[in-house]
Length: 561
Image (cartoon, rainbow, N blue to C red; front, side, top):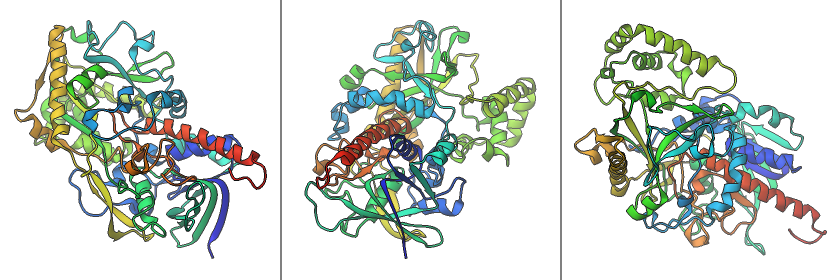
């Protein structure tokens, strides 16, 4: 006999989006059941439920990018908070028929509340908005034009939503957190209803096979990009191709980001005046400057939205000759390495494009034993022992004033980039997804064009130059194409049902009570990580649902709301 639960709102997934929606609604006085497949601690068996089928050479293992646990991916993220830009919401030839069904102005009012949830300070993402940063730039004398150097990223504590909001989840009288319960199917009511389709209930299972049915007035799928898509694909009782697949867009338009290191900047300004590291605003929040490209330049040149920032040399390559970098490398490859950073980050930083040896790194440390020891003590305290805000990372200054560059750009939407259900099933009987992450020539070529634009801007201002590190830049980019940490597009938002899966309010087209709160709803991927913007959309959805539920309570008996 299945356990039966009833509530006002059922939220599937207790990651940042689910927790924000659940607590916002509970604070407004509405009853919420928050379902989480995992528990408060990591469970490898539960995590394996999210494994994908087959091998996609461009895609990360889901276990390195997702976490089936209270707090979701915030258990393993670094805390970078960056909003999308107004141009992302504009129709642009470069993104084809991808169209946001709302304007930037409709989501902008929610950015400050998203900052409060992430605990990353004020929603000020330009150095010109902060008196303490005005008058300085990455290098002295740089003037914003086609290339801008005033854009900021903000850093969370980093905020682990499961830990930071655990007490609020436990103490809320209106919210029930049910862990160890995996939603396996959304069951719609048979036939159609006046005004739109509705959900009958959710089917859920625990590891030991116990079944639960959850009935609510509203249902929100907030299970992450791939898992939200998979649940819709798996709900085939009345929809053979999956809920939301009415026009064939479910699973299509899969986007990550284009990330590559193919250039190095060499500034001609005094090295000691280069801002290569994090800064702090008046509230102590860590911020960092990036090179970005103006909306006018993007429109005129047909460039994807992108950001470029200064990074350390590849730490795994001992030829850098730096004792601090070698110390970090040795720490990360040690048995203790997995305790310092998330596994995905650890693996990324311990890969080398050139042969390397532990002995070579030990020589670097021995040669710089003083600076390496001082760094270990200072950084260890600021990152792991200091109360409050933790320093997000470290950067080593360059005496030559030359820094490698990291390009982090928009992945353009492509029909041939998609996910699909496979014949392989997980322990709950749900079909595993197979990913087909595709990057086009335009994705690749834009990397060179962005570096050339930055080079031109620096040369024209007499501040330096950008040199490419490879003769075959496009080939080098293709070797580095890899994604799946940021999952967008597979439940695309659209104005018309024939163009996507959900509408501007995140309701599945044709349903009046089923919503998807996931970055998978984003029609384009921007230059920004997806978590921060997803939280803004989640708060907007929570406000809408709270209003609908309040009106429903106030409606006279016999009148549907």
